[in-house]
Length: 394
Ligand code: PLP
Image 1 (cartoon, helix red, strand yellow):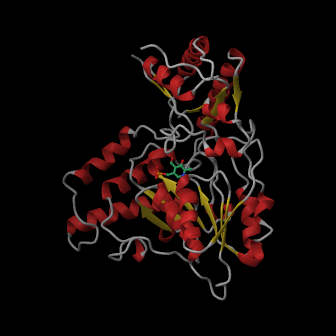
Image 2: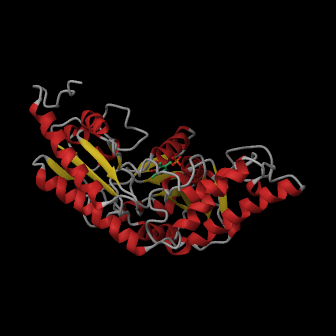
Image 3: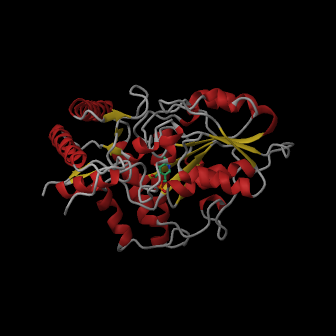
């Protein structure tokens, strides 16, 4: 059966070239990069080559790139910048985050709240755009960190990070930006973004799982989360996962510079999918802004249909998508992000996230639209009295 993979915001298929570059480091080049012999030096040089590739992709120095075990760890350390007391700032103990942050950021902020910090969530409009001015009120007097993601992982909506960066600069507050979904999809110059730290992850860009990076400004104050040796300039102890880091570098080299024509084509296909679903399915609607949107994500609500049931049905037909984000999709509650933008719980439970990559074809999209239309119609025909569609009889 043909497989149409539309879950690239959860993870991507690893590139063949990435795998080829990784393989030697899983076999013969197995040295520890901290060792002072030839095998160790080969590993260490390979890590530094990846660091240079990642640094170049966002226009920073290699020393500003800290490898982590993924986007989640990079977000945890990034939010931790909030509890690094800056000179004369010990009164600043308020963390401000948007209400649509990934759990990697939100839960880190909550852990700081549990440790005595105040936590304020700003507001978000019905089209999924966070109000930058929400960061202003308590900024100057009390804040020790602002956090706003670059593009939301469930909606795909692009956030006003540059505006928040200006407020952060005026208030002299460190600003963390989760760039896991936007990396190599939106142009990204670290300095122009105005962040103190950003998080990126390899498996969203056709690299391996289990590796990411925190990229920081040269004057950023960082709190250690992992204690041990002095790897990663002493900021993140532990023998690094050399093959994964090599794979990360290879994925970046194949995706940078960003090919604008690929981005435009993905955008066109995403619009074709959105239009096709909305025009052929009366209960379908797009969640979030239609304009301020990253190229590969469409969040579609099918009012009155249970997304999980629809996804099971689609999976059997070879179409793979997801409900909300991967981290929450096993739960039955409506997504926190979708309810934050004002979606009724039933509509949120009926939402499917479709996410494309550069390999998605026009035929894939047309076939997927047709199958979703048939799936929704099948499930609506079996509608039980509580308003949610029944599980298909299989
Ligand atoms: N931040 C965002 C916006 C994400 O979408 C994800 C993953 O889905 C993460 C952070 C976590 O990244 P990782 O899976 O590399 O830990």
